[in-house]
Length: 108
Length: 141
Image (cartoon, rainbow over all chains, first blue to last red; front, side, top):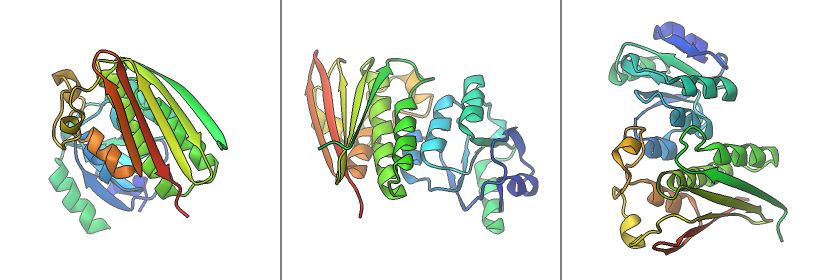
């Protein structure tokens, strides 16, 4: 499943559409960056409420397929710019990480 | 014998640039054809160490040496130093200020993560002088 397909099925809004054909292989939930950094896997859809520039760095270094900002968490302007520069998909949903994870689990 | 060396100046207290050095090291190692497992170990350890430099030490310098069988990273700062390294290595222990915690850091995972993802970690720190951290990741066959 691509990030674009994920966006359609989970009704996510693209905030940064950088590589919508990237494959989503699994998912990860977390807001503590060091925790996510050491545990998220390549191709993960990362559910979080952290929308700062450091999240983009973690997604890049961890090779996440996309970041999904849950519960309409805000994306900082500098994070948006960095994501565009570094090709990181960022999406947003009004739902929480639990509900989104359940839905993703059924799709994978 | 070094096959390849990289040098970075890390600015302090600038979270908008934190992770730039780690990101560049990742790109360079991928370009050199290293396996993803080795690259992952290097960048997780280096990112944590780079962030620590920004949070606690007002920045510093990073030198990376790629050798035939390992990648060595030396991070040097002139920050306040680490008074109790053993305590600092304890998972969950953190001295990060609230503004840093609000960014998602300060969980006390940094140094334990670095140890976990490297084959050698040596910290030489003097209070009031600074810290030198030497990290080595062996290249997987």
